Image (cartoon, rainbow, N blue to C red; front, side, top):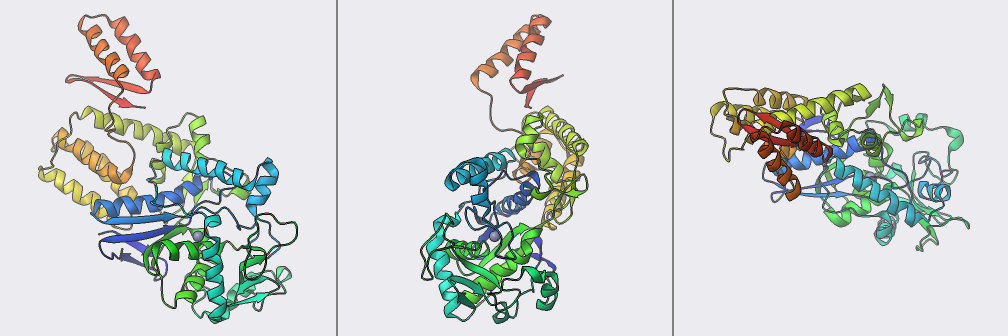
Length: 458
Ligand SMILES: [Zn+2]
């Protein structure tokens, strides 16, 4: 069974299961600009978790939120501006237009990386009533207070505040810059649940406290409680989300329901871009679109991510990507050359490889070790080729690298391959080569061997 590092307990623990199901919430994109590949690495984490759990025969119910309101440029003070509104200004689109544009880009990019879609992608703007109800409940239970139409969470009413990120309230106070303090807050660390809207603000909603809009943190509490219930198993995010975003989510959700909600908090580390954190703010932005424009298979980036475990920083360089692309191409060729896939694995060595592969995955997603097993197994002559092919196909359910594409070619391409076979038989090599080139242009590479010709998709 899969074991993961739980940030709450600082231990590697077996994933809890209830009724054969694992419920998982993952913090998703704020759709005001394209997600960069560092974000993509973060979204890969719940994909790998879900794929592994499904391999273990479990049901997985996955949610990822789409933030389309309330993510401010500065979360700690109220001087920040809503990123959606800034982007709308910049691009001359409505906020809905911005959200639609970058939501589509988000799906294009995650699809290209074989990140299996979540069951649900709830949007913050579709959950305003639930957000208001949650804020109301927190006021009623004495965790939150109103000042001039804004609602703040009083962190001193929630003793566990800071437990996830391992900080005391005093340490947080020291980390805040005093001159940015909002004078309306009771405590320096209090955070906003609902923001009173000034006269010029767009994206405004009616509430019991007048016109306003939600803070960023509350949407994840509202949407997880609505769709996953008061108790669920896994919450993932990027390491940046741990504080304040998730510290605040715990205070909100547990403050409202009065008991623990999430069993396990799992975090993905940063992708480093030439040893600098690849954040949007550095201007050092590479997207999946950039990779495709430069002629890379997006899955080469997925393979590159397997160079390190999710809890370690991984370096992104063009060299590393080039090397990942080459290795992935060779892996696919090797799998294609193995020929037909055995329906069953009966060979003892093959079974041994499979056990080692799953042990590596189950050990807190040790992808580097799992990939090493893949390379060893593919070249293990003691295992019949058809069973090696079968292992590759099975493991690809988790790896998601299209190692053995199960899709067949369209009729036209199949026809060309048959035509080339005919040309080769009649020793018309010029024609055979011309057809090979045409297929290559169509993204299909032919591999000739003593047993015949196979193909692999580029
Ligand atoms: Zn979140």
